[in-house]
Image 1 (tube, rainbow, N blue to C red):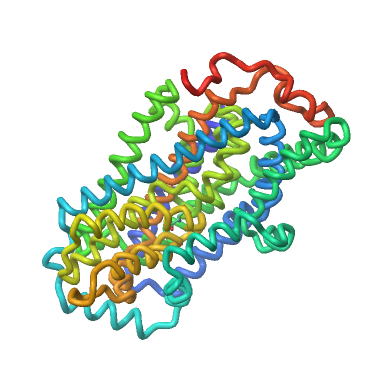
Image 2: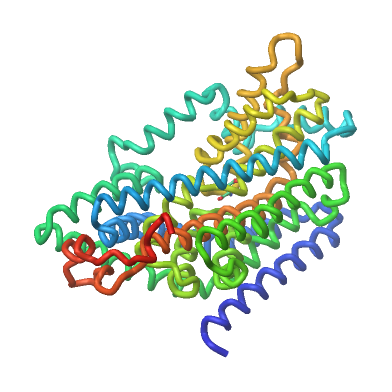
Length: 463
Ligand code: ASP
């Protein structure tokens, strides 16, 4: 068996064993799995896999964006690639949100939700002082304008090194983007620094290749940890219909909408590409984090998925931070569901607000576990604000209703997030293919190659 196939089979086995072990633990302890088990599983998965991925993340993202931008080179082509990338991100996220709104309105998972359970969850959420409660209260009160300001501030960091040291990706990306552009304009003077980052990128990718061998263990433990806390019984409980709505939405978006876009715009067999990206998708499922998965996504996109270096090194890091189709869809379903639970009818205006704000909230969500649950607060507040004084408003503590099952949904929406990023990279590969001589190898002259690279006819966006 080839090394790559062996790894894929091992990750898949880890995932399946994790699901089974988690469910067995849940049943054995009747849903009350001892903390020692849960802590142990989380410790192994987090420390020996997630932390290793996070360890390479900042240097990988910085070097990847700088090398990617440098290999695109010519600012006008970079502008075109960047423009289409943003168009792709926003249109697919908007499509995901609209799909979510339509499904949740049709299925109505919150109608008839038991009121005792509703009150119990809200009171329990208010009474606890956990991480999620803190994150939700920090996110509340900022409103849309606050969320927008926050994104702008991240895009223009006053101290990019400090932001990178704190592991913040968006500021790191925007600074690297500018640095990459400037370096290419410097010609031979920029070459040593570009060579350095290109070489750093190669080194990080090699490290990722090694770390990936721990994926079966990491993914298995993390999945077991999640399932042991929630159990498959949640699927038939009062939240079952809500979870099913999210699953159907993610399935339709991931297996039909995105493949259709890839087939039509990227002229690629979408399901073959999905198969090629399986290592990244399984890692996303296990880790619940598109940021932590990013190193694997880049590696898989380049080595198996046939994405150009020029597109994947630039599009994937940006996508992991701002393109979140799964999160956008989930936020729309969750918000409308919660309003339904409280018997508050949302009219077309409110649903329109959900579409707009859920897209923005998903952009603002970091690629980390439960980020979507937290930024959902922005959507709830915007809808509340439009309801007027006569209609009851949704308390923020209502997120307590869905908190318990969030992690399972997070696994699925993160997978769709990473799939959306990968589809974007594959589509942009048509626009920015690797042409011979366009990809600077360490020690070569990256500054001069990109601009002079002949533009491949197949790289035309209008094709
Ligand atoms: N966990 C998701 C991600 O990393 C974000 C979310 O919570 O929806 O992509």
